[in-house]
Image (cartoon, rainbow, N blue to C red; front, side):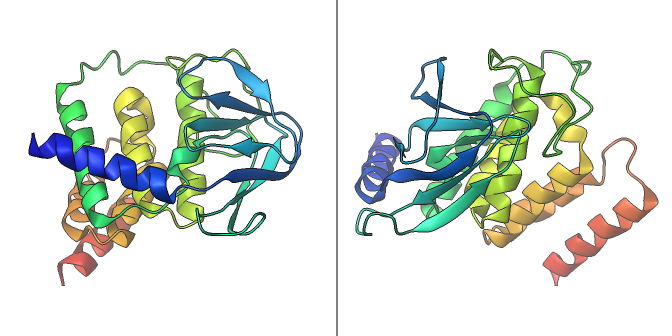
Length: 235
């Protein structure tokens, strides 16, 4: 009962503070999906999006969005650039309170612990986590398609670059759970660990760095970098 009340309060708080998300400019192929629908539609400058929308950019596409708070005036707020080959949930373009982050992190851990790994042999495009990949995303990509995981992980990097460390960590962990092979990508795993660190979750960051040190194929240089980060956090 207590958990349900906390979740309801967090939901209402998010609704109360969420502002408009305006597409300021764009180029190339840029699409939006509203809510839980699987239909992607084209985006145009001036379009107003909501937190339950998701944006996707093509290989040569890009978009600039302005995210305003509920109290900010029209056309003001944080500007975010979405490069090519990304999928970003608009609900992730925001800061989380420490309480909300811990709740969501706990929920993600529960999902991960009960998740039945489908296969470690899924074929992941070689362009993983590289903006401007060689192959343009197929507009008909399904959520189960590994290429979708690549675009979502690219989106997590966008969150990190714009200072949304809490939602970056959560999105990265979700992608690693749904697309296990992507969890072997050193750069993205380090991004999630650093995002946890910057979100002031030192213990969680240490655990993530420790898990990274156990990755297959990690180089001596990468091991040294991971151990340096762990020792810095333990001081």
